[in-house]
Each structure stands twice: as C-alpha cells, then as structure tokens.
Image 1 (cartoon, rainbow, N blue to C red):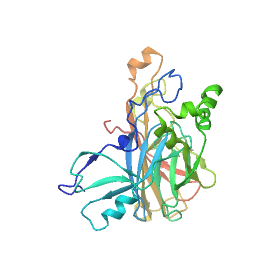
Image 2 (cartoon, rainbow, N blue to C red):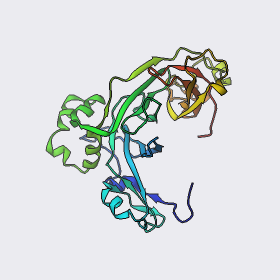
Image 3 (cartoon, helix red, strand yellow):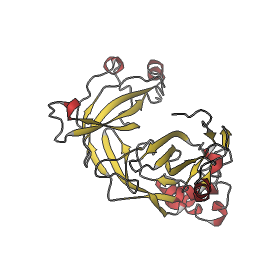
Image 4 (cartoon, rainbow, N blue to C red):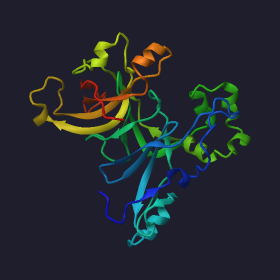
Length: 305
C-alpha cells in the first residue's frame, strides 16, 4: 500500500557504488562484452518481519531492506545501522528513506540461468536466519537452504572459473591490478557468497501437465524451452481446497507460478513460425517437505509480458 506523500523511487545501483555503464565486467580484456545491470527486483517479507530485496544480475543478490522515516523517534539509530542508503530519485527523502542494513551478498547456486530464485519459508524453516530458495522448478525441482545473513568470502578466480572462463583469465582475476579496476564494488558483492545449509534437494518432475496449448499440439517441433524457473512462490493450499486428494500425503501443498519462453533458433523457418522471446507461465504445486516433490502442474498461459 502506498501511503500518500510517502511513495519513493531510489537508485539501488548508485547506492552500492555501481556508477559505470555496466559493460565488459566478465572479461578483463573486454572480449565478448557482457552487459550487467540489476533487473527483476523482488521484495520478500519473511515471517519474522524482516524484509529482503532480491535482485537478478549475474546471479541473485540478496540484501536486508531498511525503510524508515527521518521523522520517527528511532530514525538516528536506524540511519546509523544502515550499511547502504539509496539515493532518492522521486519522493521526499525528509519523509522516507530506503537502504540496506547489510550490503548485498550473492547466491551462487547455479540454476538454469543463475537467476529468478524464488524465496519461501515453511513451518520447518520460518525465520530469516534460514530461508528456502527455488533454484530450478522444471523438469528438476531444486531447492537450496540458505542463511542470507551469513556469507563466505571467495576468490574471484573461483567465480570466473565456474562461469567457464579461460584458466589464465580466471587466475588474472585475483591479481591486485584487476581488482583495482572500476568494477570493485561488483567484485566485492560477488565474492560475498551466501552460506548454504546442507545439500540442495533435487526431485525429478514426473507428472503430466493439466493441458497443452494449441502451439504445443500444432507445431512439429518443441515450441517452448523445457527448462523453467521461478516467477513467484508460494501460497499454501490446504485440505479444504484440495479436497480428497491422492497427489500428496501432506495436509497442504505450496503453489507457485513459473515461466518458460520461445527460445531463439538458428533455423529461420522456425523463427518465422515461432518468434523468439515470447514468455508463457504455468502454475505448479509441490510438497512442503524435502525433497519438495512437484505433484501437479497446469499447462501454459500467457500473461502479456
């Protein structure tokens, strides 16, 4: 809910020291320049009242969000506890300010594209000391258990190597001359790897979707990418809505929405038939306990983005 006079737009990238054009940051010699900017912002409210900002970039960045009014009695204490205060683009900073109590750390857990990790909690994991993150949804449902307030500092070479960089480039990443470049704020954020608890759970999806789209039935080739990842997660659906169910032994399931897309194809004829980068979504339901088995899935539908 937007309180009149307290709506605000802030510059997150500038607030953490990213002031360049975001290009050329994965290659020291700037070969195959890769754009890098924050995108796909999500706000996650934990059960204990903590609010987290999740952002897609090279991977997923997590930071504990602070929102406060300079007029409140605790303003001085909150302001002094902020590790980052975001510059205000729109709104009155004398009424409301936004920042982070701890700078961003990075979730390095792989995934199809290394982004869109939906955060959720269960009765078993219910405080922000720990949170569950969906790394992939389909055809493998993979869930990691994170401790987002804790991180380990890892060498840049480990990050570069894991992303398939050439060995000599990966080793160069740890040299003082490379780390002194203007992308330092990014490198520091990447090196803070969010701690995980145990191993990531993986369950293979072995169910049929509830329906197929016309495109899936009409085309002789697979229109959409098989692999999917998060859109939003989760709401709890209990036995009152499930009714007599044979899909799970639990008294409720968790329901989310995932997305796929029409991929780019080298075959020009297929591109004309199915233009790339059209996105589709689907609902899925999974069990609230590890390995979080997916028990139902809808067909695709179009949300208009």
